[in-house]
Amino acid sequence: MEATSAQANELERRVDLSIAIADVEKEMEQRLKRMGKNMKMPGFRPGKVPFNIVKQQYGDQARHEVLSEELDRVFGETVTAQKTRVAGYPRIEPKTTESTTHLEFTAIFETYPEFAPGDLSSAEIERPVLEVSAAEIEKTLDILRKQRVSYENADRAAAKEDRVVIDFLGKKEGVPFAGGEAKDYPFVLGQGQMLPDFENAVEGTAVGTTKTFDLTFPADYHAKDLAGQTVQFDITVKQVQAPKLPEIDAEFAKSMGVVDGDVEKMKGEIEANLKREVKRRIEAKVKDQVMEALLKANPITVPTSLVDLEIQRLMQAARQDMEQRGMKTKDFPIQPEWFADQAKRRVTLGLILAEVVKTEKLQATPEQVRAMVEETAASYEQPEEVIRWYYAQPQRLQEVEGVAIENNVVAWVLGKSKVTDKAAVFDELMGQKQ
Image (cartoon, rainbow, N blue to C red; front, side, top):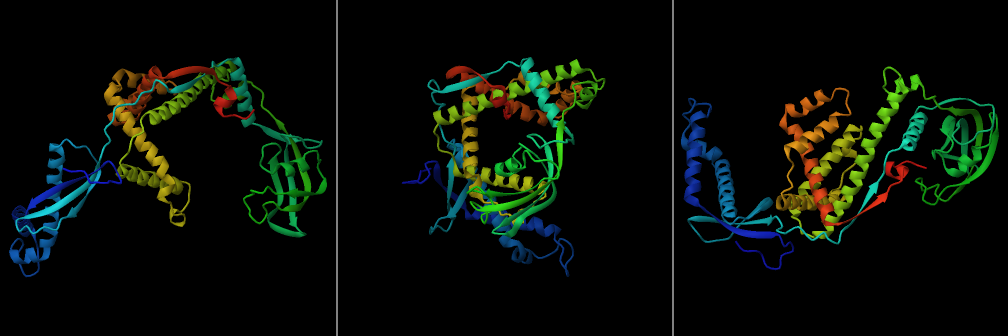
């Protein structure tokens, strides 16, 4: 087997394949005879169709099938003998030879990259640290209360966090424009649902107020005909409602799933869930940095065939997601290039992780998998049922095993790199607005 000269892809290889014509013809004839034994054709008894008619009708198909199978066999034997790890599928090209006894082909394919895991001693990883305290529990309670906010009419001027209902009409040079009119339109001040200048004009108004004001749309506004343009809005305020947050009492606890309404039990559950979520987010941030460190330390070339397969997989996943959302994918053609970078990154990481796991013996142990299943099950009302479900079918454990292997890799990388602990800000870690 020889590598091509001046390769565009350093992983591309070529190998010559030779198939004996006599072997193809012999196998083809045997296959046609077997087909003839079961063939039915008008004018002939079942299985009594003359061989020349069988060959005339199905000879080309049989030859193609036999040749394809022979090529697969010879290619497999050749690369196995040479201990070559083939990535993707080979491209088979016929050679122009004068041989009367053999058919000659060239198989063009890619191999997996060969490399040793790179040095991680200079990699720097910042590990967030956050202990869940009473302050975080109270902050989470406030968020949960705001998610269950109700509104009641207020006999005063509208303020931030109030819910207002208005009529509005927008005009550009005195002419109403598309999308600039609404009746009984509700929104909450301060949530960014409307442009800031629009909200500022509404804030401070009371029920019955009629007002006209100018508004300049941002230069990057999504409606191109309005971007950067100044228009006039007429508004009428029809309702102002103040927010009313629920009290932290038995009813609130019941709404959170605590059947007996025990407030302290609810707080305990919130604390447990919060600790799990904080742990998960810290692990995710560390894992992201570990993956970046592995990519930087292992600048490998990856097989384009594997990247192409991953692009197709990502495209199919995107189509399914769009269809589940009620979108018609035929009206929205998905382009492969949208997924090229993501696919290359995923394939690269997959190859690096596989090599690190193999080299450093970081496979998951049954004890690790069991501990992860039990940790997941702990958040359910009947943990034992969840554990039994996982172990009822071994394939259900594959995803858990994959996460366990990633955790082993993370631990290994942390042991090789420079790790510094940094106190995390709760709102930043949880992705919440101050």
